[in-house]
Image 1 (cartoon, rainbow, N blue to C red):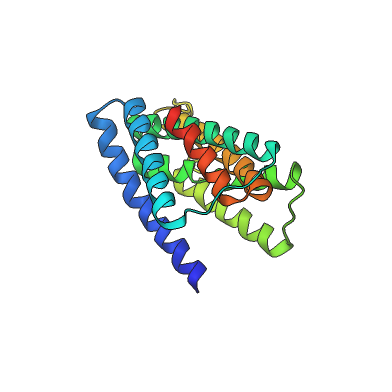
Image 2: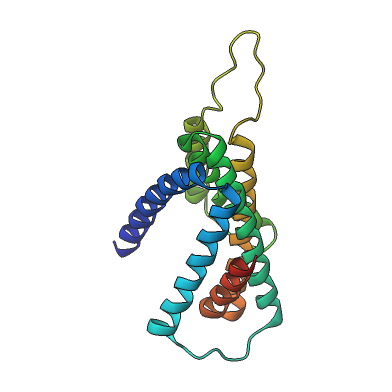
Length: 194
C-alpha cells in the first residue's frame, strides 16, 4: 500500500512539475530553465541529505562511482531535451512520449545487467508502453497529401526518454555497487555542475 501511495504521489508531482516546466520554457530559454531546475534540485537534495540523512560515506567501488556519474550526465542531457520538447510541442504529447523511459531502462537492465522479469510483468510492460504510444498519437495517420514528421516536441521528447532510460539503468547499477546515498550524491554533483 505504501508503494502505491508513493507511486501515485510521484505521478501527480511529475504532472504538476511538467505544467510548470512548460510555462517556464515559454518565459525563459529551455536550456536556462533546465540548468536552473537541475542546479536547484541538486542543492535542495544536498541540504536534505545533510539535515535528515547524514550517514557517513564509507569506502566505495570505483565502478559504482563511474556509473552514478554517467547516470547524472545522461539525466542532465535528458532534462535539457525534455525542456526543449516542452517548449516546442504540446505538453500532453511530450509528457507521454518522454514517460516511455522505463522501456529503455528495462531493456538495458535485462540485456546488459542481467535483470529478470516474469511473464506477467512483461505483459504489463507491453500494455503500458502501447498505451503511452497510442495516447501520444502515433496511431493516427497523416491527412492525405501530408507526411508524418517527427516535429515540434516529438523528437526531443524521444531523445529525453532514451537518455533518462540509459541514466536510470546506470544509476540502478551504481546504487547496487555503492549504495543509494553515494550514488545519489555523485549523480547530483554531476547534474549540478553540468
